[in-house]
Amino acid sequence: MEISFWWLTAIAAAAMAAGFCMGRLTTARWTVEEPAGDKEEEAEYESRRKGRRDGKKDSRSRFPFSVGSPVSGEMVQIDGDEKAVVAVHPGEDRLYAPANGKITKIFPRGNAFLLRTEFGAEIYIKAGDAEDDLLERYYRPRVVQNEIVGKGKLILEFDRKGLVKEGASCCVYMGIESGAVLGSVLASKGALVKAGEPLLGLRPGRMEDCDTEYEAAGFLRARAEI
Image (cartoon, rainbow, N blue to C red; front, side, top):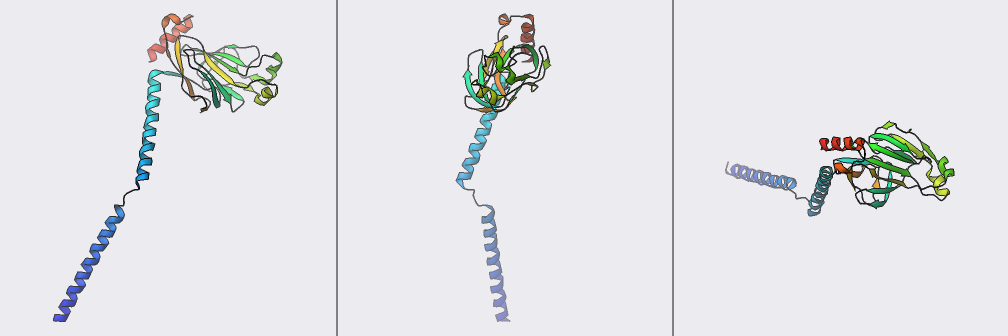
């Protein structure tokens, strides 16, 4: 009986020791710290994402209206004064309405338009710098003058390769032609932009800068919507 008692005691002690070891191993497995590098990368990612969100909020607060890019491509030129002008090297052969509005003018060669937006600004859009009337065969307007268009409406098809072969530029230019608005370019030079992506940020300027009753009405409407 004495031997059996000591054997039982030894077995119980061994079982307790084994249980303790298994518990420590399990705890250690679930409390392994992540590498410091992973934590730093995650923190940097969150910081960048927060910065992008804050930047978008700031742009929206400063410029309640925006004009999208009429074409997908690369920003190659920026004139950042109050009548902001941009140039995009196109990656496609189509131009789209950058905002809701009315096509108030189509220029003779069919490669340039005036778009009067619903918030009162008049936007000038032009594909290429061709001065030769013979090059108009490379342009195919898809809208008519005085047509009401929505943002993203196809307004022009053009032949980039044909223009380049003729020695003409195929760059797409867009700027604020008139209207009581102040503008700022939202993309940087060299940036890749997509058609419809906000490119010009706009806010109402001064009532006395309105040249027509239509502009004055657009100005007042824009002020009311802010």
